[in-house]
Image 1 (cartoon, rainbow, N blue to C red):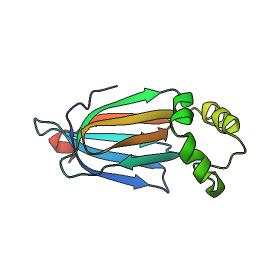
Image 2: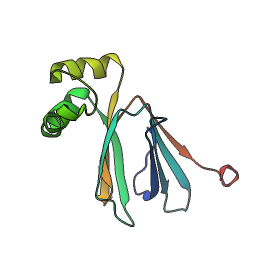
Image 3: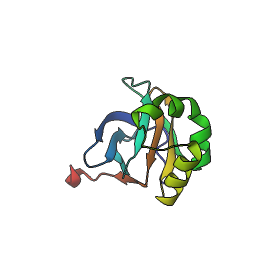
Image 4: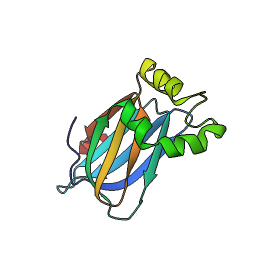
Length: 130
């Protein structure tokens, strides 16, 4: 995965209908970098601050997602979040079968969280792409 270390978060879009999230960032050399998650099931972002600086985006196993988010999963289960499931074991099987990945966004300052998605793309933008 391409490094996003020290990129500043400029903006982000959550498109629920088309199931993607796009995070627009900028390097210290003023190069725009788009981070796009595809086939998003769920996400949780925190600490949205002006000047947020990313540290890294890492991929973890689904078991880490279930363990680290057990409390919120139990709390939101009656609302079918992130999807309908009877037990955490059933949710685990579904996420693995459908090939979801757990991406954790770390920050040096501000914006952080996680995304459950099938794919991530990190792309430097050329001036002609803008």
